[in-house]
Image (cartoon, rainbow, N blue to C red; front, side, top):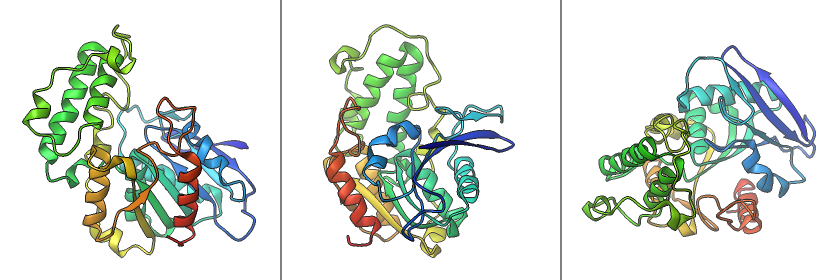
Length: 289
């Protein structure tokens, strides 16, 4: 693996290249991106594609990448610009792309702004709250997670996030009547660790979950867009946002094994089915499914 740094006026972006550049075998690079997940989260899926040149990166301000813009928020348009610069730096575009969660939001913004950058995009469970029929209630649930985090720290905040992410169906009065969950029931520490800048639990990534996709630009793009949803995510927040995004684009949601982080193995506290997930991803990238 070759680790490199792309220096831009606003950020120093660290990325990893597995395999040769230009790629062998006539296939373009396969770029795997997330948000707030950085390159370290893609070691398992990248290892399942030894025949491909796989590129992973740390978004600005996350992992090893250093931001120089004086900001702390995470915005899809900004990160899409970073990924566009990265693809240009590779000198082997357009690329194929697997994008997870907030990274899928970045990827959709990228294709809308730079449609020539990506030949096929597999956008796995983009958390696009505005696409939901209960968007206002979902935004209220998101704000409640932030409020718990601000008041009590990461253990309590993560417990509140898990409760939100595991709620089945629309956010109703029954959801909002639930007591604040005890961190201990999720194996989280109850003590306040003093952190308030977590990109998942704070409001720093609200522009990601609040992004409104450019439907017309995405429909007009030459990119083959696949909106993927985990089979275990049916009815859950990111399963619902994925299905809603697919509907906006006039596409079926393509079912993948496991859950929101189904490509992860035992390195995760919530392991998925990495072998089955990789097989499905290969099928979809190859156009066989």
